[in-house]
Length: 291
Image 1: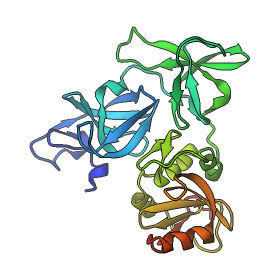
Image 2: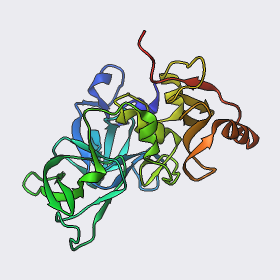
Image 3: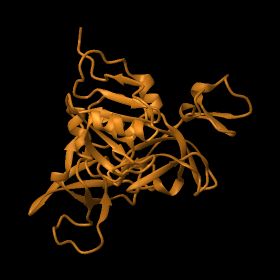
Image 4: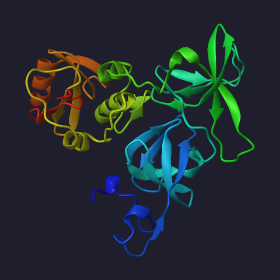
């Protein structure tokens, strides 16, 4: 079984694995929520462990255990398994209602000139809007997740920076373009920094299309594309993925630009091959037309 998607360690395992593991406790997960701007999802329970992926503010995490300050479990969005610092999670929260669609922040008050340091929120963060206030623009009053039921509070985010989770948009390319110029970050999953597979996943999940977190899993998840390039097709190389924007252009998070960038497809294919990245290995189409 793929360790990235197998919710088990040496002490605990998800109850769905009962009978498949020995010497562990089988656990029903409890839902938690990320309470910091971005939380690394680590391969091991130590601060300098490899970062496998990231979870943005408001994303949900199915917790299996907390041991020595580390929470072990899986991201709700795709089942990716790993460790998060326990103090970055909250277990008292309201389910998200909106997503952050532009670089943003949260204030302690719904005021343009509010005192105090704002807390940054990246594109991809999720918030629970419970009311609106107005000062120059509409401000969303959001629920602040907490670890204690009686200490929750409110914060305020500019409403123009948010979009409702439903109805889902239908154009993954438009969602990917929200991240243009975002810095490239290996294993990044937010508007603070994102990698190639993180960009594809963010764009597809925003449109309600299930998508794994890593490019090899994505390549295996979707059907082959045939015929001319179509908007939303995915191009795969060994260790890389891009999204087709039109017949001649693609968008990808890449280490050449060190950012999310549009690029002529033919130029990118030639450059990647010249740099030793090899040829395109497949073209996939998440958005299949109904028969």
